Amino acid sequence: QPVNTRSTIVVPLGHSKNSTYLLITIKNRMQTTQKHVLAPLSRSKALCPKVARPPLRISARATAVSTPSKDATSDLLKTALSAALANHLRQHSSIAVDVRSTMAGLAQGIFGGLTIRGERWATPLALTAEKIEVDVGELLLDYGALVFNSSVALRNMPGGTVAITLTAQDLGNFMSHVLLKPIACKAVQGKAFNWDRASVHIGQDSKGRGYVDFEGTWEVDGGRYKVRMVPTAVEAPGKAVAAGARPATRLQVSAKKLVTDSSMEDGNSSAGEQPVQPTAAAAAAATPAPATAAGPTGAAAVAQGLAQMFSSLSLNLQGIELQKPSLAVLLPGTEGGVPLLEIRMKLRIRALPPLNMEF
Image (cartoon, rainbow, N blue to C red):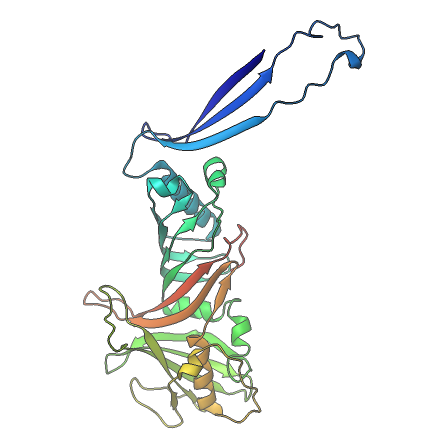
């Protein structure tokens, strides 16, 4: 006679009493028979008719035993991300992951977003930062990979922002990093500008403005140039800056060719210095003009090229795209300290970096 069977598998998604459970119900319709059941094993295989496997129907539903303040699945995601970052980084002082989620969203594998904060990070190839804060919007996760393998896989390409705070040494590491080499090799009129990482200095001029100084050699004339970048706030008419947010900035870049052992005094223009403010066209991605094309030369060319490069900077960290940078110098407060450079960029996660990341 036909027999209906039902089995239920209970999978806990956490270790506490208030954990969320995944209930999997298996319904199976079997046809029982006594024919050939007692046939001896020596009989021909023809005496053991093949019995088709009955159809299997599986349904799954997420059931909340209770509503905890921090659900177990969010904690699982936080643990997985924290462990992945700790394994990726060469060193770090702190890693903090905060996950935004709701019970309704979790049932569909949807997280409202997450924020990652860290201090004194260093990647395997010496990309360093004093502080970093990453804020990512809605994530669609591969729920099975998260629950059963404690791994994070995405079903969408979430966007967000990243704020990186750099010391002068961190900025020197960034300028000489392998990620920036393809950009630096054509930074000024399609030719390379070779940074001197030891020359980077972040300071404050006599007018109270923060600046970044560095030196490098331009491939076209072999000359050594001193460059100053001054981020200035841009006020959009009719648009108020939200509390806690930083205003948009643009770069005022100046350069001068170093003939002797000279220096650029804070806030003053010296002979040979060519200040350049990037236009809207310079801030957009564009193909650099060849060195032979008509245009600025010497210090003016260096200033214009580097203003365009930093204003239109775009990076791909093996699946994480960073674009549209905004720079700001963070001046020390009354408690002292040193000026720092903050770079804010838009991000898009197209794929999670591999464990053997190369940046």
